[in-house]
Length: 392
Image (tube, rainbow, N blue to C red):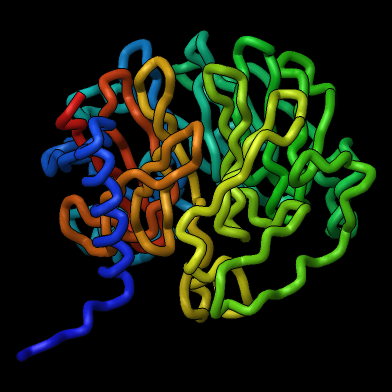
């Protein structure tokens, strides 16, 4: 009898899909998606597609806003930018793009020196209920800026790390932030939720109109005053990460649900933590915890092995109850679909590769009002894709 050993990633994927099939068999109808290989349309004006580090879908009109981060553009991608042009394509385009449901660019603006304080390393974005666009960056001199939909600067959040000041972990100070890993807007409460988890390990909440600090907490609701400023200890990567009380950087996303729960992507520990708006811990659950979450060999493409951690970003399903969490895993290049109330895995899609429907360095995810899913890829992935919900 011939036997073969299935590679471990395929075993995990098969197991995840069997779980999804089981849920369907029991009448829970886990969502199923099919890639649209013709979305989006090619960018105009010979603009190059760069790192799609974040996106946001405005449910009023299902327009997709995306960051087209140009910081890591390569010379072979910019052949039309030389004088004389050495190739027909391409040039750097604006860093903020708005796409309509058909994938056409309808607005584009922003980029290096666009306005004073423009983030040097764009990372996150959101659109408020008035249609204003908010962006942020991860470098110590970066902050959050608010723009009108057509690119007019409306407000600067401030709280920038002072130039020349020693950069160190400080989970108690709230005046200055050493770059912002991610932020989320709560339009109802008019609050900004900041995942201060690139160099620190906490969530901070600020007034959305004034920028004034309101409250904050650490993992499992730890008060700011009780968060230590020590490095996170290593762990034996042959097993899952330990269930630590405090957050483990990087805190790679933060989102507020319709029912007022705050979801934090704890990429450094392969888990999601859930809180009330006031910072009371509700629950946590692992996301593919057999994946290495942190360690000295993480951090490609800078000469190291590759990315680590599984919770790069997440989105809520589009139904009114937001029944599912769609979690973007940039290490396994999967979208894991978890039940929001229980945290249990119900299905998955994706897989590492370059073909339509595959993913490579997925870093962001969003859903439109019809339940379709949009994914963005970074590093050398540099792509945005649309996955159509086939069983609404």
